[in-house]
Amino acid sequence: MAEAPPGHLPSHLAVSHFLFDSWVHEHDLMLPRYERPIVDRLEGEVAVRYLIGLAEVATGARTPLQLRLTDPELWIGLAVTAGIVEVTVGSAPANAPVIEGRVVDFVDRTTGRQAGAVQGDERALAVIDEFARGLVD
Image 1: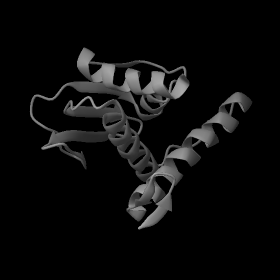
Image 2 (image 1 turned 90 degrees about the vertical axis):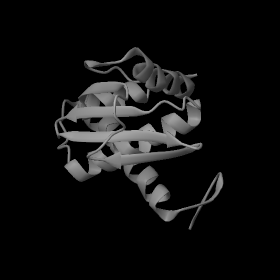
Image 3 (image 1 turned 60 degrees about the horizontal axis):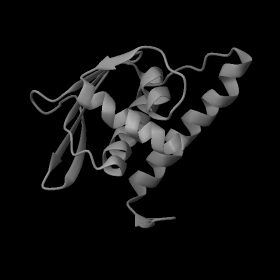
């Protein structure tokens, strides 16, 4: 368990938040200087898993999702069963709404930053856009 503002959390969530936060601020510093950070697959996976799980919980959407992301290739699923949010890598609930785009564009759009093309089902995009509005407001 790890200490966090909301209380004690599983340590993997604290580490995931640390990696996600590092990713975002690395891009905040490097992109204005026209530097392109390397997107490590595992770092991208941890950041996206953390972010989509947090967006689902924060918005209360209870929407199963499929993320089909590129650069690097990631297929991440989100299921909600009996109020429990589960994020998986390599599988997703059948017929779940889909979001597609590059990993960095997905992270940028979900955190309220200017992003490249992220497309998909309106219900799926509504989850990440609602979360982004909450971060920006």
